[in-house]
Image (cartoon, rainbow, N blue to C red; front, top):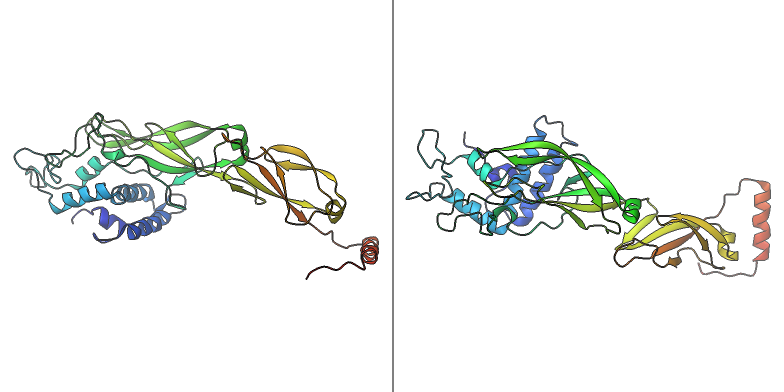
Length: 339
């Protein structure tokens, strides 16, 4: 039985659009991600899926890969063609087309687990590294031989992308995180193995949601003497449900009583910037914002903290409380409101 090519792995046709490829990739990653899949071979499958997608999502890499599939016996006169890779076919002939060789040359994918981060494109799509990162040699030349179409001996490994969840408090103070992952290491014979490694990551103070942290040399293994690719971690800031972020600005909903809103009082509010004393202006309305300048995320240009007031009416559970509301009703008998 013939080995599957990248299109077979993703379950798409060779003329599939970029959108179709991305859609099928997301579906497969959700299906086989080790955190949710019961498949005992989930790790290998997710690595295979990621490896295929890394090639097919890039226009240039996909074009080169298609050329290799169309002409697997391109090696002529000693030149290394797309299909040969210097390997042998099952019958021992030189220049045979082997799936293992293709995987070795294009780089192994790997599922990054643990540490609160996930593969890219599982939950959201985000930017990839410098174009051609998997095909740049140490000397800056393309990983593909410009004459024979084969691979150079010192191609840089592919950049990898993942996501890390960071608590909002860590963004305010800066913090150290530890993550565990399998780091690809290319052996002398060209095969790829994986070493379990714990990496300590410094979360920069003031980093905003969606920014990336670059870990040099922690991506896919290089070929020959080529350097490893880099690992880019997209930061997703986690926070309480009453908080939302807009860049470096932080919006926090704060519950207040009707008398605090009407009379104006000073209250203490627990915020990401610490416990702050805040004066509620008299006659405040629900939904209005109090701006605390510079109390947002401490980025290069610090954001502001906006406290969104939410007036909460106490429940009437006693006769005294009911009487108080009756008195309030009498006091404001002539008040009209828009309904």
